[in-house]
Length: 422
Image 1 (cartoon, rainbow, N blue to C red):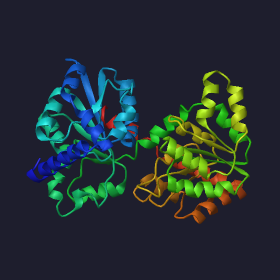
Image 2 (cartoon, rainbow, N blue to C red):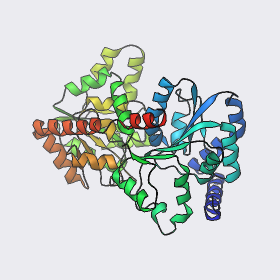
Image 3 (tube, rainbow, N blue to C red):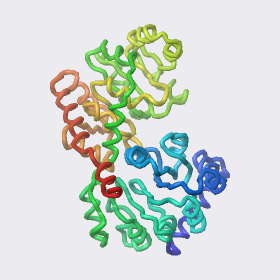
Image 4 (cartoon, rainbow, N blue to C red):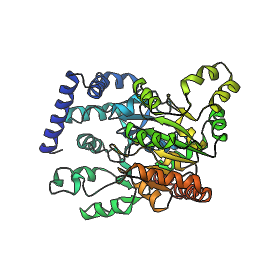
């Protein structure tokens, strides 16, 4: 890559190391996770094995790549899978992912490290998910004649490629054998800078992933029993304090509804903050878990039935819990951006979310089909939920539209898979 790019990467690495030295949590994890990467890869990578490499920035991108990983594992057992992450929020959650043979951090995109990594990994194919562009790694792959693909790619006019200084970054796009993008806008933006001929609109593999999650959803008798006691149950997923202010204010005034809330952060101080805001009987999942572990399911169900709100202070349940709701509220929209709306919509229930959703194509799609409902203030939320409670037909129709939107947009995995492995 060019000098300007390499200066920028060097400055970024220096900033991370400085932040780590001052104890910044994310920076510390990034530094510690990359220590000894070369030794780790040498020990794990056996000579003669054939590897396909998938790289994701974080957890969301990993989930986008996962349908293709699993399809490859099922149909081409001759390949082993190497999965790399850039961010701790992906690596720390999926470092023990059993669908891959090696899971590790991607080394920093310094030219020497990128070349050593590619030389040691020896992938036969490489897949980058959504918007991961690391110039020196891509260049090293090209030098070794390794086909490289972008999957579920999405481009916006604000990205560096389309700015006046885009010449610094555009060479990276030419290093991909093919770019599988989510929408027509992405394709047109690329065509505007001369990237065409190797671009295919295939949609977003996340639709395939959430359908698979739905089909494998856990049966949770305590959540089912909780729902049956109410005419209307709302599932609040990945909520943040600003979301919870709105949710709890409304919930406390509506005895006819029930609430299951699964906050994004489950540390004790946050859970206590939620409990302090509740004026109706509630139960934490951690209070029934000992009963479930002891096989006392009936007793756990009875405890769940006795309250109006369940607080899910554990991870691993949210994608299955959505099936027990009549509608869902997806958190994050009053912060950096909404979380996964599709995980709820796949169950055929309408989804409500905050104002910071413009960068999320699936949220805009849900709004367009009238299965998604954006809010900007508490009164918007109240109008949406009160409308669902009062009009069950409207609730059902909105849910059907949300579910249909997910299923109508499935198939990206098959498009990519058949194009690459035909």
